[in-house]
Amino acid sequence: MTIDLLLFYAFAAMAIGSALLLVNIRNTARALFLLFIVLFAMAGLYLFALADFIAITQILVYVGGVLILLIFAFMLSNKELLHDLQSVSHRFITIPRWQALIISGAFLSVMLYSVISWSQTMPEWIESAQMAGTVISPSDNNIQALGFRFMTQYVLPFEIISIFLMMALIGAAHLSRKEQHT
Image (cartoon, rainbow, N blue to C red; front, side):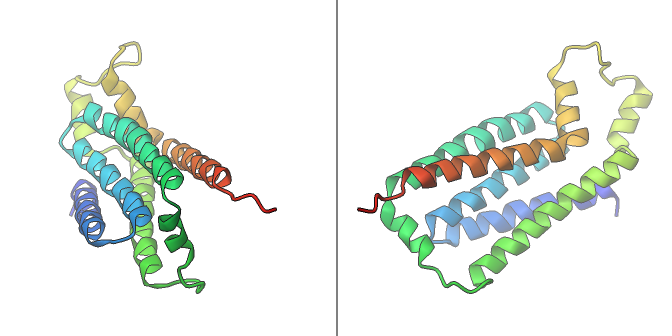
């Protein structure tokens, strides 16, 4: 089994598994975070369909914009839903957290494996494009070159920055919802 096939199956399993959990979960906040995983896994599948622009658009628009807007609107809209999140058991790991840990671990392992393997050797489809002479040179101004850079060489820093921005947005929404103590 090649790395390409392994990554494809990993992204497909993450997308299907997260989507199944998403439609069966009753907690809206957890459903939004599962939607994040589904949308990102779909972007990975778009890469395998050689639709780099659609994959980058998926990440930038849907994951980076629409999903963050949904989380922000959720946090500012309904206090009862947030109270349900806070009333969860105070044990370190409960059943829903195990699911989140498994999905997060799978997501992180796929990303790290792809970054490590692509930093050592490039995938076959990129090498065949280099041999055929269809690779875009750095002087070309094309979205495909940006897609290759974002999804191979700079995928980990790109995602770390997006997670930090999401954490800052959630923190700002939480601080704005604090009730005044008199």
